[in-house]
Amino acid sequence: MAAAETWTHGRLLEWTAGYLQEHGCENARLDAEVLLAEAAGCQRIDLYATFNEEATEACRVAFRELVRRRAEGMPVAYLVGKREFFSLAFRVTPDTLIPRPETEHLVLAAVDRSKELQAEISDRPLRAADVGTGSGIIAVCLAKHVESLEVLALDLCEKALEVARENAATHEVAERVQFQAGDLLTLVEDDTLDLVVSNPPYVSQDELRDADREVKDHEPHLALVGGVTGTEVISRLVPQAASKLRQGGWLLMEISPMLETRVRECVVETGSFELSPTIHDLAGHARVIEARKL
Ligand code: GLN
Image 1 (cartoon, helix red, strand yellow):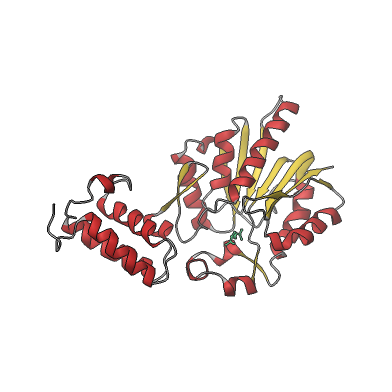
Image 2 (cartoon, helix red, strand yellow):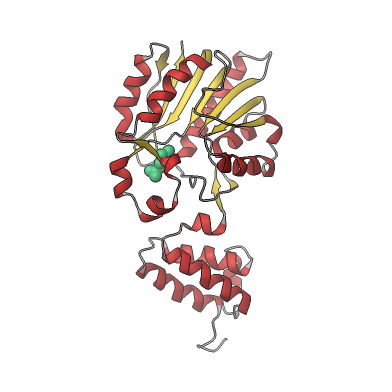
């Protein structure tokens, strides 16, 4: 047993969990474990086997710096440079939104719709666009789960596209994912897409003001904020999707539950879609809009 004054992994975790909690971190113990594993260069689970071992000097130096930045509000995903989504590890940087579990509902629905379309159209590959791809999670998961799909991953932010490219390479789908910098679907030709998938910026300016400091101070506002009402980007995207989709193609978008009615109206107003029922997330919130091009 190590002496009480020795900084074992166990003591470091205990002290840090308390410290992070005092600094307003909601999951202080989990954060401490993830950061210590990063500093020690091991998996989180390995910390339990080395609970009573003394941390090396290098580990403590690295850990101290990570804890300092976490206490200031920097999200853990940016500190360790990765986050898991749809059972895959994705690189994330402050140029990209941190993947949220809600977005898995969007990916699941898009995989299902792609497979249905594939059953109808077997003489050519399907073509999808992921609008505002960020770290590329949607584009990569779709390419990974639908073999016949070619994905165009679009974003305004070049730095985000670099991260998305790296994720596509890591997950071995780079051959079927093409990256392009551009504004929504403006660079895409009419009637060429089978699927438009997007987790667009949909937070309103008021909501951003009330958001957690992790979100407000560290995540890219370009990826989060739609504008004053939150619907600004969606209301530009929907008519563009109407022109770029082929007949029978699908539009799938993640939305804020507060915008459900307005987004559904916006889709109906184009006169180009048949809307499906809104998909709800695990918290019971309206989360994914699905519409089929007429
Ligand atoms: N769900 C995210 C949040 O509430 C927003 C993601 C988005 O704008 N697309 O922080």
